[in-house]
Amino acid sequence: MDLSLTDVLEAAERIRGRVRRTPVLELEHEDLFRGGPVWLKLEQLQHTGSFKPRGAFNRILKAAEESGVPEAGVVAASGGNAGMGVAYAANRVGVRARVFVPETAPRVKVEKLRKLGAEVVQVGRIYNDAYQVAVAEGERTGALFCHAYDQPEICAGQGTLGLELLEQVEDVDTVLVAVGGGGLLAGVATALHGRARVVAVEPEHAPTLHAALAKGGPVEVPVSGVAADSLGATVIGEIAYKVAVRTGVESVLVGEDAIREARRFLWDTCRLAVEHGTASALAALLTGAYKPRPDERIAVVICGANTDPTDLAA
Image (cartoon, rainbow, N blue to C red; front, side, top):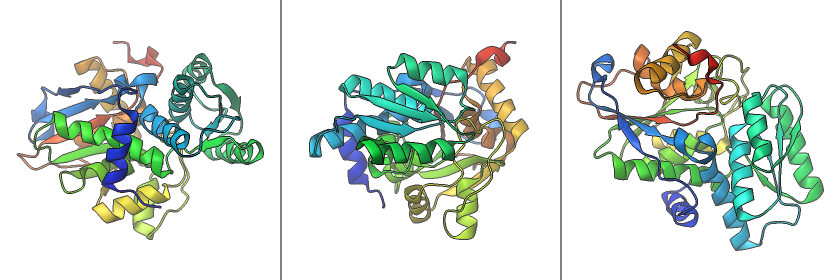
């Protein structure tokens, strides 16, 4: 499986009017990064609080175009955000959704899944446990399986975020993207190839792409830490790995304290309440894990807001 710019352009047309065109915000703290201007792509303002509806809509609508969505509806496995994207898209399209999540999924995400009309089944301790059960459910019932990050339609839908960014920020040089399974990375890197470089930012305790690039292919890694609820995949997607190699994506790692500090920075300076996984991307700048040139124009994808805000109070 691979991904092309044509796939992303077709996804943008297919989901037009179904998702929000999220804004960008220029930070007023460029001196902290010892570089040029820094923009935040505020994708946490997307429906359901993350970028995931983009890919979910593209997956479901393309299936509807080609052969129709099965009577059994759609099925997904998720730590929370992907499931919410599928639940939202399915609800809007008018099909059933059943979402399997690990028992460790944050309560706020599980409750929101149910409010979006999905049937929620909690199983296992990690994403892979829920994934195995969801795949089996799809095979048993014939439901359309919506992968959290490793299907061409899913990745192409996420890539529409990159197309928007190119229209919103003139001459952006580098885009920082937090990576778990890599669906967002695959789509954005495909959309931006030849226009801007993409840097993958991963928690030290969930280095799926970093390990794959070192080993020459996707490998399973142990996952833990504060960002595991949203960046909890144990292996990078095949599509993301291929796109990363083909487009020259660089991977950098950030630690637990750096992630927490970046999350607090976004709250203190911008009043943005985001997930720890989301804050990882900005942490690369705050800590120097990624060191920009003095004139480098940088965008950071702020990809999810489904968090418990109680620990952000001043």
